[in-house]
Length: 467
Image (tube, rainbow, N blue to C red):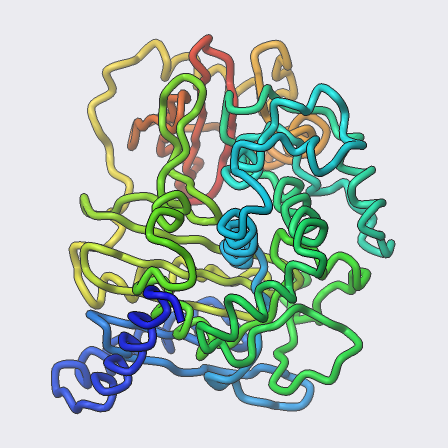
């Protein structure tokens, strides 16, 4: 057994001892967290969820709430299996890094070395670019036929036919396509599926006893059902072809117990060398030298001036969130079985119960030192209302922005009526982009309006949502 695994086993043993010790303080904290979760579940009308809170190495709470399966009236427990959605990306990253440690691949390798049928123009795209969402490969969202069963070769051909949104390394843009390719890459170089690699080299040594790949055919104990809201009524999740639940962008089942074991492994930096864990949890550097707060399958951010590592997921009636507040030695896991659930609201509320300094402050007015930008964005909002947004003023927006999102914003704005003045509430830099967030009043309702600009002044993101 390698050194990291020995230390991990010791940590698991010590955690077990700590978790058995009574503590009045932890009992009180558990009660307050439980009360918040129950109230938030009722507010969001989530059928079922599983929640875990680990503070300073001690499991403060691990509990199921509500129903795992409405039709059979099965309660959620700590053994209930939820779909991972994109929370599975950090496991795909582990499968890739295991191949790096085995000497089969290098992060600097061009993906064309392993996918010779990829366009020759993709030669600058490396494995690192795929892991960090900086490849420029267009996201598959909205481009797959959810009823079609794809072979690995068909997934490859579909992705290779996509245009690049930007040269590799220029920007950060979330791309499920990149993680689908990473899963296929592991399949190819390991000689078995990436799920088998995870089972043998991650799940088993980390004691994730029920974590596994998704299968519609297998009999899987404790499998939760996923749900969606349709005009306020709970419905079963949409059916998709089995092949769409085999890809590396997030096609796993795991329980709360599995993720508690995973949290201990992450805390101990087990399964990989320390150097490779640093690779995973280091923000990517763009070609400009600017950093973007994403590593390999993890957002690597800050909260209250301290490190926060997190990821969320959404797929097939499931929502997931896993947050590690490193400065407070706090981990929060939320698994829900409703597509409209907001797991981050649970996480943020729980974090604030544990430490009020971790509360997300409400948006509030700040000094507006760029009135010319605000005037421009006021005009942009009215152009969105009139349906006259000029594509020449935009860059790197999703391919479906002008065909789908812009018409939706136009209908929304026309239904809301006149907008009040834009009140600047946040200005931040993400990568090379400047992001402005305003509060704007429509009658009695306040909306959050965000616009991002690339260095040449074009708009790279436009978003309007109720605050």
